[in-house]
Image (spheres, rainbow over the protein chains, first blue to last red):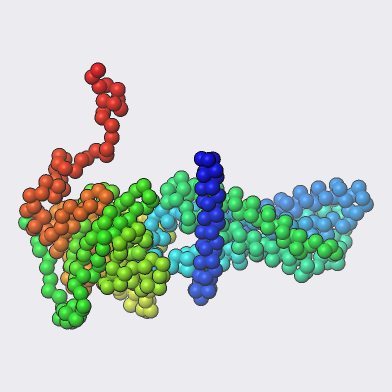
Length: 260
Length: 289
C-alpha cells in the first residue's frame, strides 16, 4: 500500500511540475509584447547569448563540414555519386545537422549561462527586489532573453550550416579534387530555398523556443543555493537536449515525410 | 544618551495626514504562515504599524522578521489571517493590486539585492528609470542627491563588485528611498556597517521618515540604534510569537525577563542560546554510568 501511495505522490508531483512549467510558459508568452516595446533590452541579450556563442558555433560548423565531406565522399564514391557530395552535405546541414547541433551547442553555451544568471539573481534576491519594486521580472528579465534566444537560434543555425558547407568545399575541392563549379551547381539545382532552408530555419526557431524556455524556467525555479543552481544548469542541458531531439523527429516527420 | 531625531512634518504633509481615514497603515491580522507544513514561521500574529511612524521589529534569528516584511510586500500568501495595506487586504493572486501597492513601498534587502552588472549610479537610477517618466538630467540629480545622503556621491561610477559590503548596503539604502515611497521597509539596515555609517544610516531613516511623512518598518538585531530612532518597538520570539510591544522607553523599563534578556543582550534567561538538542553526555558518550 505504501508503494502505491509513494507512486501516487510521485505521479502527482510530476504532473504538478508540468502544470507549473506550462503556467510559467503562458506567463512568459504574456510578457512578450511588453518586452518587444523595449527592444533595446532584447538587443543587449542577443549580444550576450547570440553573439557570444558565435565562436563555438562557427568552429563546430567548420569541423562538422570537414568531417561530413570526408565521410560522405567515402560512401558516395562506391556508388559513383561523388559529384553529388556538395548536395548531400548541404541538405544534411540545412535540414538536420545545422538546427540540431547548433541547439545542442547553444544549450551548453548560452542555456547554462541563462540558467545560472537567473538562478544567481534569485539567490541574490535581485528577482525579489524587482518584484517589490513593482517591476515584473518576467517582462524585464525573462522575456527579453526569451526573444533573444528565438532570434539568435535561427541565425546561429544558418551560420553553422554556411560555415559547414564552406568547410566541405575546402575538403571536396581543395583536398579531394571535385570540380568547384559542379560542387556549387548541384547544390543550386538540388536545394529548395523554402522546403529545405526554410524548414531548417523553422526547426531552429522552434528549438530556440524549447531551449531558451527550459533554461529560463530552470533558472527561475531553481532552489536559491549553490547546489540548486548547479543542478538547474545540468537539468537545462539534459532536458533541452532531449526535448530538441524529440521535437526534431516530430518536425522532420511533418516536414519531410512526403518525400521529394 | 542618544540624540533624538524628531522633526516636525511640513505643513502640507500635516494637512495630508489629517485628512487620512486611519492611523493604521499596515495591519497584520491573525496571520499564520509557514514555508512548508512542518515549518510554521508565524503563528496567529497580530500587529499594527502606524502611519508616519518608525516601527522597529526586534527579535532573534529565525523568529520571522524578514518573513513578516515579505508578507507585507505580498511575496508570499498567508496561510491564515490577512495582511492589510492602507485599508486594502493584500491578495497575492491579484497582480494589478499587488503591483499598485508595491509602487508605494521601498525595501532595503538584508543582503542589498543590488544588480551586480550595473554601477552604483545605475542601481539607484534603476527604479527611477523603470517606474517614472523623469528625464535623464532629472534622474541624475535625484540619484546624486540620494547617494549624497548615504555618503557615496563620489562612488557613483564604481561597479558593485568594487564597493565594500558596508558601502553596498548604503547603495541599497539609496535605491530603496529613490522614489520617496510611502512605506519604507528596512531589513537589517545596520548589519555590516561601521559605527559612523551606522549612526548616519539611523539618522537618515529617522530624518526621511519625518521629512517625507513616510511609514518606516525596521527589522533589526541592533537594539540601541532601533531604540534611538523608533516611535514603537515590537519584540518577536521564535515562531513569530509576540513577546512585547511599546515605546522604546517602555521596553527599556520592562521587567519582563524575556524583554530584559533581549534588550540587554544577556546570555542567560528565558531565551535559550542553544537549538533544542539531546544532552551533551548523550551526543559525546561521556555521561556518568
